[in-house]
Every structure is written in structure tokens, then in C-alpha cells.
Length: 171
Image (cartoon, rainbow, N blue to C red):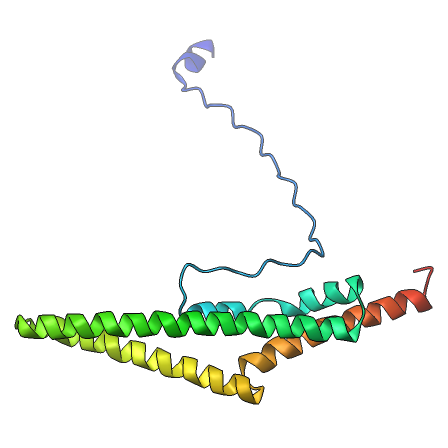
């Protein structure tokens, strides 16, 4: 049998699988996502932030209604910044597109002009959507309502948690 072992290829030893330790979820406030762009997607990304967790942590830190209202105002001011950045971004894009459309039209590049005009249509649609977000903000609807409700829900959960711990000190 030793002869057969000589010609049998040796199988390499398989390394033992190592399991990585999974970190526990923490109650830390998740960071607000940052995008490289200043467009409509950046506004939506900001609005999708977990403000409920932030409100919960803020309630545990300072369970004062004035503090809650100040934080909601800050969140809405941050939304305003995102909106203004998007407005400036789209205004600059339209100026550049108009220049390229005019110069390519003068050069007789019909297909390129059509592509640029399609791009301009998309930019105008997104600009209109930003204007709708501004209108909704003044009326307290849409993204503003979502941010406010999310933060309030978390803050109220934090207040309830404080009260629960007060009522049940042994748990």
C-alpha cells in the first residue's frame, strides 16, 4: 500500500475556519449620511436619515421640550441647506447645458444637441421637484413632516423609557 500512497497526490491541509466576532449593536446616534452631490438625491438621502434614533438619544440626554423643539428646528435648517445646495447645483447645470446646446447647435451636431436637450429636460424636472419640496416645507408636509414625525416619535420613546425606568427601578 505504500506504493499507492507515493503516487497519490497530497491534498493540502484545509485551514480551520475562523469566525469573526460580531460587534454588538450600539445605541449611538447614527451619523447623517453625506453625499458628494448637491442634488435631489442628497435631499432624499438626508430625509431618510434615522431621526427617530436621534430623538430617542436626545430625550435620554435632555428630556426638555424646548430642547426637542430646538433640535427639530436644526434638522429643518439642515434640510434648508440641502435644498439651497440643490437649487444652486441645478441652476449652474442649466447654465452649462444652455451654453453647450447653443455651441453644439451652431456646430451642427444634431444628435449631441438632442442628448443635451434631454439632459436639460431631466434637470428641469428635478428642479421642479425641489420647488415642490420647498412648497411642502412651508406647509409642513412631505419631507418636513417625515423628519418631524420621526424625531418626535424617537423623543417620545425616550421620554417613555425614562418614565418606565422610574416606575420599575428593579428591571
